[in-house]
Length: 83
Image 1 (cartoon, rainbow, N blue to C red):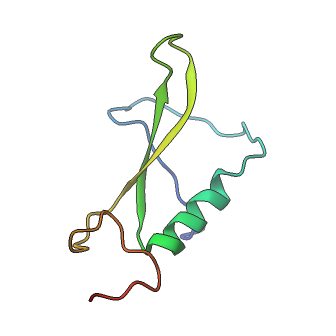
Image 2 (image 1 turned 90 degrees about the vertical axis):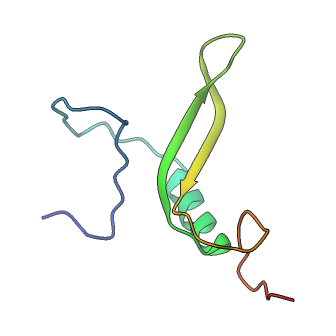
Image 3 (image 1 turned 180 degrees about the vertical axis):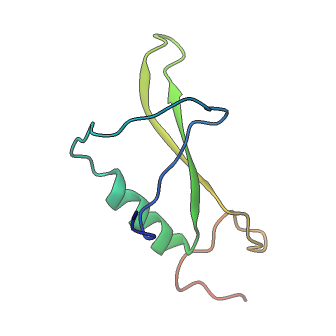
């Protein structure tokens, strides 16, 4: 049984079979945790961009978050107060 605290992100539109087993060490799990805590949000997707000039993977990663009303700020930073 899968741990309900684990997050799995799927490629949009993918409907084929999958297999696991390709593990590598990465900081992204820590980045997700820190981002969600700092901005008090829930990451629901991750977008990976390609470098426009080379067509290869870039360093750009976008966290797609659950929409929540935060006034005129794009994100609410933990500890912010409405003034």
